[in-house]
Image 1 (cartoon, rainbow, N blue to C red):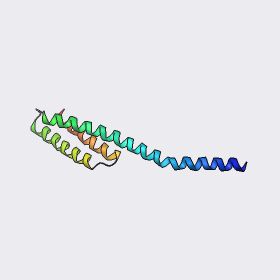
Image 2 (image 1 turned 60 degrees about the horizontal axis):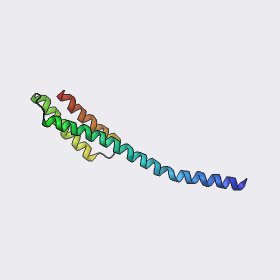
Image 3 (image 1 turned 60 degrees about the vertical axis):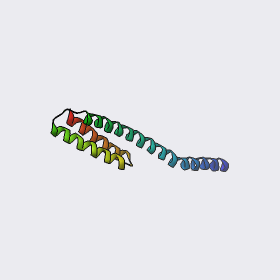
Image 4 (image 1 turned 120 degrees about the vertical axis):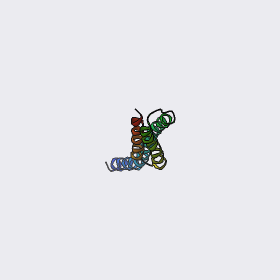
Amino acid sequence: MIVLGWVLGGLLLAGAALLPGRLAASRRRTLAAARASAEAAYQRLGFAVETATAGSGALARARERWHTAGALLADASSAEQCAVAERCAREGLAALS
């Protein structure tokens, strides 16, 4: 019975040691997905701004969002920051619609 307790304790300890690595990998995947989504929106906005024929007010707002989204993306180090950059890019796209 004592041996079983030691074995189970060792397995529990080994599992707990692996948990931080799994959490870090999950955070990296989440950040990579958020960054890819934000960069896609940023690229779409850039294309829309460069090829826009909208009025000057809408184009100016969209261009401002494009620059802001780019700056936010450059500094983003979390999925939440990437989401803010993506939202900014989508606002720019909406201004041109």
